[in-house]
Image 1 (tube, rainbow, N blue to C red):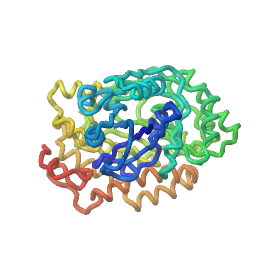
Image 2: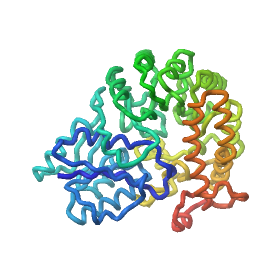
Image 3: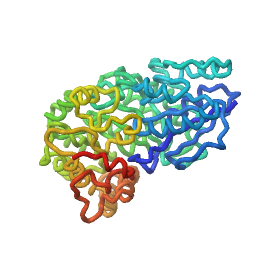
Image 4: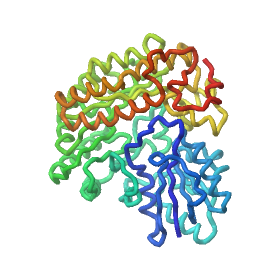
Length: 467
């Protein structure tokens, strides 16, 4: 029997250059019985296809929110041929009523423990409408990465923990994976990394280092074990700003092969951080604390990509972009991840914006394709949608080709060659995105959300845009 796993391509996706393996499918493949053949079709790499010639006994689909319309279209193609479709992932788990109309079964939560039951039910002809995998403690199986071999990715994906204790109002991670920070054992992680033949790895943890003493100690133990094992890997990951509280953690991370970290700084304004409930001890210390920790991390040869949110209610046209660019310049950030505040389903932000009548695009499921984190989907008290897009384009000038080449050499000379390469890969994705969408045109400022930055959005969407 054959299982086909499909990662849908979102035609308006921000990340047109897909850098890493979609790891969830590796976990599904690992717990699928060996008498099944498992094939991956990754539209993020190869583009869309018709699927009329694809044979399967079961199709598994996952989707982030902006991928949902494409996922539903793919599901319809297989279901019309009598091939059952199971849909899982974060969107299906958080918008169950909608997703259920487009699939024969929903898989809610994490897959490892319950997926063999789905396979058994398919074989017995008794597929259930809903399976709830929940969150099943600390154990994470070793993924089966053979399904990724047909594609070339920049990074092999791995995971050392799940869950995030931050519980920010805009983030769906805690809704899906929970606030409990579940850490794999050091031996498990080292064994998995040692078995990966490729050099470059991304740990897709939402927060590798956590906040507790236990979490930090586990990080220190992990980095020491990786360094002692002389694995010869280079890796990147996502951490919180407290990763740079002292020299020990970044120094050991570098010794273990860390080349870059992605940090959700979100804003340099305390009022904004409080509003999105990212107001813990780290954030209350203010922007000087950010500067100090970024500098400390970089001193140890690890590049820093800072992520920021534009469109928080406390921002206005004077602060929404300038503070980000100023901070990036002052701290010599090696990379940037600018996003627009987007109320994703299941988050507190979605509930609040919806209750206030501030969500502008609710023709679901089709309008989900606008929820890319790079397109205004809400009304804001101090900024128009058109104004926000103009400011967003200003921030995107960070990624002009000549600037990312400059930044590569600066990082190479002042941080490390490894940091320069891995942060360049990130910046290059954004540069290509901007080039595709005309963000570097000489006069991109317009009076409505500009087509130049609308992610190849069809004309029908632009006609709906409200300023």
